[in-house]
Length: 371
Ligand code: IPM
Ligand code: MN
Image (cartoon, rainbow, N blue to C red; front, side, top):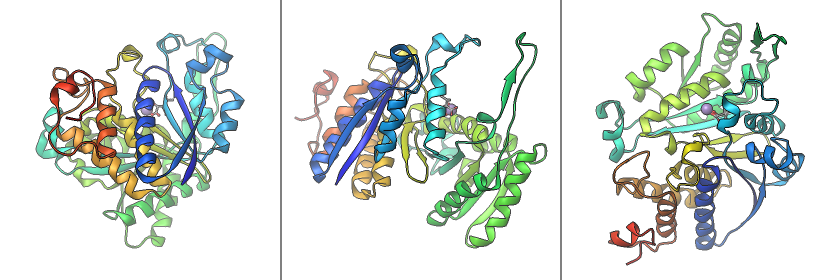
């Protein structure tokens, strides 16, 4: 299979984690006889520095022509504390999501048994947690009308949704529930917000098309508490853009680190794969960031290409590194391995170079794992 992949390294740790995914994809290609062609393009602060624009037209052009997009992260501290900045790195990402109509952001949350003890949540609460957040990505308050006056004495952001915007992601969420534990939870704030009442009405009406799926509703404040109190109750969480953004960071505590969470952003004719974590600028260039969020996003891309066996192998490799505690500093601040070492180990596993015992000394020298 030949696939053209647009690669956007972006900012901060984006380049170093995405490079690990490319290494892994190359090993997958070699083992299974595929060809992945990469087209590198700019976005975020890196694009502002070079072109003045957080999303150059050329990037949109390349992404539109590609079979999928692999993306790292955007953001730079020099913009974070400058409310007057005219251009911001994040604008690039939001505009790309909108231009490609990537309306469904899919964020799986998994508890890894060897990492349970590292979470601030009790292990018995976390065992076997496995749910997916379907976050609406191109509507709501992120894209509504926003304004502030010149004196900055007032500002507003409006939140709007149409029936169609709710329906298209809700269909994907219902279908995903059908393939899994058949439970869908709509998270909203229908006791206060008109948009949430629309979501509830539309999703409730759609439920008759999916009679095998059990549908329930939770207000977002309660959902935030339930995710920590009893996360096993969830199978698919469906929610609007801002609530999904917040809840997915919260849910990352279940996995042990935000660095572990992958995501897929799906539209009708395009798809982008990116870790949930941000640019984490203080770690940039130090080879300490967790590459697993990106590598698991690459696995989601392989699934999207219908390369199921390949995707399963990458996930198996990731689980193998985690269960052997070959993990980065975010997970184990004392006995940690480098970004590139974890990437290398996953490549070795994927290509079958790891068969039995592994040479700990070589790993510690940031070498390969072969004896
Ligand atoms: C995410 C990020 C983005 C978002 C930012 C960088 C604009 O936090 O993908 O979750 O809020 O959607
Ligand atoms: Mn976020």
